[in-house]
Length: 382
Image 1 (cartoon, rainbow, N blue to C red):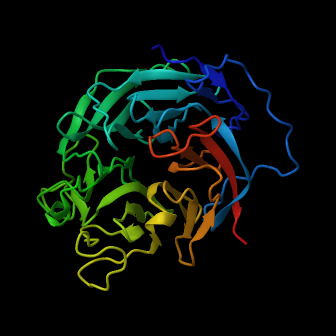
Image 2: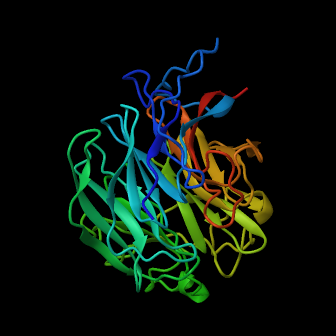
């Protein structure tokens, strides 16, 4: 069955270049006729200015705005310097481009993806300073792996080249595949790897399962990794799915717990975060305690973003956005139940926050226009 044509939706600017329209793919049933929708009149509240160098705690303010609609099980979004954004769909293995010209188009399908359960095309990352390649983490027939795909063309005409293996052999399963990748401020590529239901592997330094991995852009082991000759950056993780860095260069990661506690962790090189020995704060000084923890019914954290001095965590089962200030304080919940399941959170180029909903992934209840990329403005916390 051919994929439906995209339908344009209202949007706000991706960056300082000014206002733009992003488009969304039409929902399969019923098929929508592509049509531009006029932007609503501007409100009296101005868009916030980009944050100063001295980061401050932030909170969402105002209503969310749909930027892209009609996505199918989206998993990751990354903004590009040319004003477009790239979005992955887990089960279709497609990478989509949402352009500043008001179009959503298919950049390409990543070969070798074998979707199933929680596996499929998962995280993507683009090196800082250019978009000549996109890195993708996906579930293949026998493993999870990372590939680099050349990205050519300008905004609105991007195409994928043949993929090149960066890292293979990350254990896979129907669940607990990890899957987030990102370039750190040091230029290294980081990846979250779940325990792939091999519970004891999280405590095995010789296994890639249940780890956060650090590698060069070519997949080699950096000389300054905490374990010589090993890609392992931290261990003792169950299913980490979100990584981001604050203005001081500190790394943060969100992690799915089992039946008790989900976690937000401050990641230290070579540290052990306890799974499966402990879950949440275990009081065992062999392991690093989480900065924050939640009952699994209130969280199931996936993607995270640091904007200003606040970590924003997208949550699936909890259907809310948690905000945790990097300098401490009580976690703050936002948007509870308003958008359904949240898969990713990303710092937008204009100082706002983007979020991907995930109501079409087989575990949610799709709503009108789902799934969506939405935007919310941020302002200094009271």
